[in-house]
Length: 434
Length: 198
Image 1 (cartoon, each protein chain N blue to C red):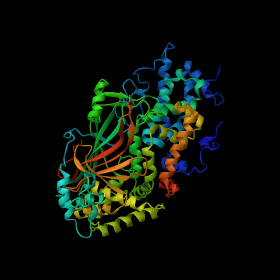
Image 2 (spheres, rainbow over the protein chains, first blue to last red):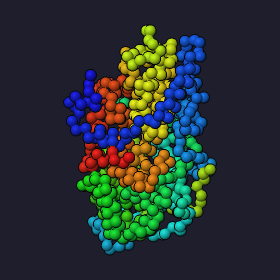
Image 3 (cartoon, helix red, strand yellow):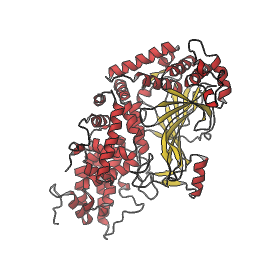
């Protein structure tokens, strides 16, 4: 027999540290005695039920759920049907409540015609952050593609647009819409699945913070996809094949996707989230720490680099060639979800503007239909990342991570995922959780 | 086929299944043999809490489907992993959430109410995993299945092929592709740091 992990297979390198890293990261302890007992009790209940059957017929197909009455353990909720015709499976949920309130339909919160104002704003960028003259739109006489601002200009424009300090409130609220773009099972069009997430971070010491998540449904991604979808009979539910080995797209064997939105689910934030105003360099930060962040580009960069270095030192990982990537991530954290001053936000944009590898992609429409300027950069993996900002307001609109995929008719499409930032700011509203 | 009621370890897995056609109790021996490792596999992918339920469900599903088990197509162990993997696939969002939690903070799902010191250590340790978790999350599901059946469940190529019902050669090519990505993602990061966050 072949050896475990292919150790005798010459096509696999001897160095198994990657597998070891995966194991170290994910490995879980053995099940508790309670879990073993509970599972055994469920099985035995099913076995005894089978004993009571007098005929030889296997009554296991369909919806019957053996062992339901014998459920033991952790006070699970009602069983949920995961798949039509499949077996329900009730997952224990962490402190979960329903948020009855329905958010308004996903819409445009931040609007703006970017370009006209952009040119003006660029002209007033402070002198310590010079813009590239050669690409100055005012001087350009070249073809249109040469007149568009550089990534640096877009980011500096956003930096100088961040001026207003939002009024403080009871909660810092970050509302995002995340989406997944996947070919349909017949590969005739792209399906876009959406979810919304709200983070409500309580300002009051000891206040409870929440995350509210909701599945928003699925539909064809673009008008072109919609045409193909209609031609396919306008299905409202999709099931992927059991064998998806050769299916180019991020789906599970037999995965079912429905167009029907779900109900909101609210999760209490605990542990390190207590008293935290968000996450910076992958660690929770307190409200006081957020207020103390240096607000000049140099000061902020020094502060972030120190934070990143201390993290690397404490956990003995190398930052060789990684610092810029960490800085970019940290600036994105500041811009996408943290309650920091306009000066800090502006400085974060200025740091981004100074990082290599960012390219301007011009004016685009983001996944929520808002106009902004796109900045692309190289991701670690196969995907291309695109950040869309509104230079008028200095607000980040979205980031997308996609790669090309091909449909059955040869049409090349983008598949992947995105996060759109719908609203970032203070509010005196209360999360609707019961 | 006059096996004693206890179905001792000397009775092979496939025989146990056949016995369970008429004597369902025989199936309990399979539970005792494999529950723990199926649980560890599920917990590695979805966390302990979900694994408690999923591992138990794996054996209920297996029991219901026992007449469809075909010894000619493979052994019982990969057959069980196949069922578990299908159940895991229904919780892709939980799996992604778990991977992302490693990147951000493992504490926001209410599953962990640890002390602040532990919390800080875990959060910081988690941050070091970011390249790896990002890579894992971005893998196509079929590739991730192969990787984790090898890395977490220690299945051989042959067993992975049976588990996922894919050709033997596909297992090797997928695993090689995945491992290239992992090593690229790991880069200069010392992968050994991970174990110490408990």
